[in-house]
Image (cartoon, rainbow, N blue to C red; front, side):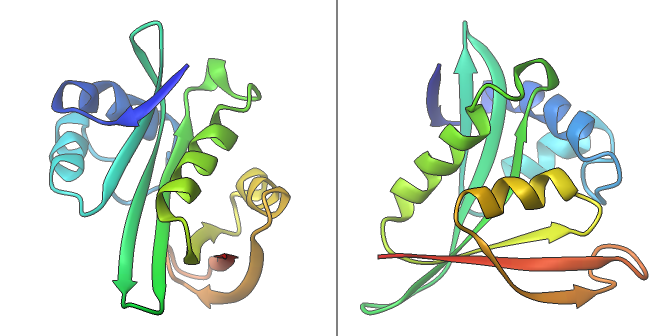
Length: 150
């Protein structure tokens, strides 16, 4: 397996993975063409996992804020194709993203409905730092998870 920056020709396959993974997500419930347009214009570094020339997962790394003495980054849209889940690909994507960031604070937002995602991030050292009400959808909590890289 290889992890690299996504290229234009990878976006259709990645859009399918996101559409399959995030069924209730505002963006990823749209058509694959609309998802590709979103991915083309997204701010940040879109990393993908590739095996046998097939896109099998992705993650977005976005640096929100950076000064000489502090950096805050966000990780978004981590997903792995169903048949490749439970093979540590998500962990490899997360570790690669953290290695890109090197130091500073990382934040991740996770819906209360994504119980497996919450367990995944906690396993990797992220801690719940707060919650937002009705962030994604009415009456649904969103957890803010954080981790400091030093």
